[in-house]
Image 1 (cartoon, rainbow, N blue to C red):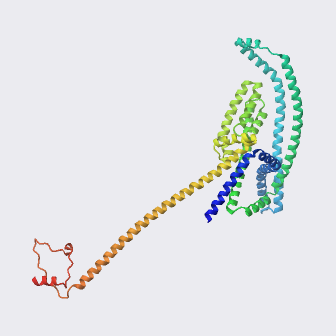
Image 2 (cartoon, one colour):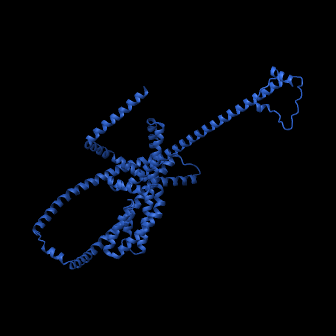
Image 3 (spheres, one colour):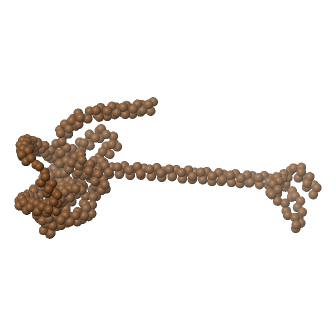
Length: 471
């Protein structure tokens, strides 16, 4: 009866799932529209949670050290009110630290950008003349190319009309695009402000929020699922925190080394290119190389030889960073093979762009760690089952050997007892009078061994009496 109920229950789940899947495949458009509305509604809260997670990394470090300092001064644990003050001070210091880094980078990069634009505007005409000379020399070596260009007939009036129409339509589109961009900017500022306020609420009351979440989950989930959920969340927190903190430290080290090397070798635009490489290094695999190519282009316009040497220097620096710095700073927190890093970057970039490239690496690391733990548990279980089977076989063999030993011992004891009984009966059957001594056998004759003859002799039998009378 129970098996029938279980069968019909599973059958109902399979049929219901099939119906839902069929309906979803036939209504993908409305489903995606609904999901877009839902995501747009909850996006500020998701962004707020992400901002809170990023701010929590420096805030937790500052709070831990401030708590140690207060404990060392007062020789006891701080009270709850003092802990809230420490939390608030840590949050303010974390925000100030991040703003200082951003403003400092802007102050470093902004003058360099202005200098770069002015130098590019001065260098581009000469660069274009050099390009024109190059193409003229190439065209002289290819006379057929000039005759081909002369034979081409171009209607310049038509080309002018098309250019005029394109510019007029482009102007209209530019105005509408500017209005849309301004609207999007103001909307984005409002969304970011709301998300930032939500992040502050999360950080100031994260213990009470975590306690409420635990109570709700404990009331709805089984004990095993509850424990598994918090194990996974602890793994996610550890991997993401280690990744972002390590990535920030690695970007700072790479940018500093790049700036020091460019200053030593007197490459132009050292500060701007170093900051650009440090910022783009957050994008795995391709970010730092993108910064290198952009910097090489800026240097190329001013001095092509220096651009080549800059690329060589960056490749050497990238080898040092990839083999010595990155594995020690970030590699331990990710624990992901290079093949899966490339797969995560490709998949994340194709789905969510640059943000996907960054976020999919720790996310893939979490999935990889969970699969690794599951595989280890299964292998351990299989080894235990194999060991148990071997132990059971060994016990069975020992049992068989023990039973054989017991049976042999029993047989020996039984035969020994039988021999004792027979010898005792033989002693009882012997006559009290001493029998006549047997004749001494001749030297050539051997004495008769009754056991070898296997003859049972009864002293009270008639045959024995007759035989003795004849003697």
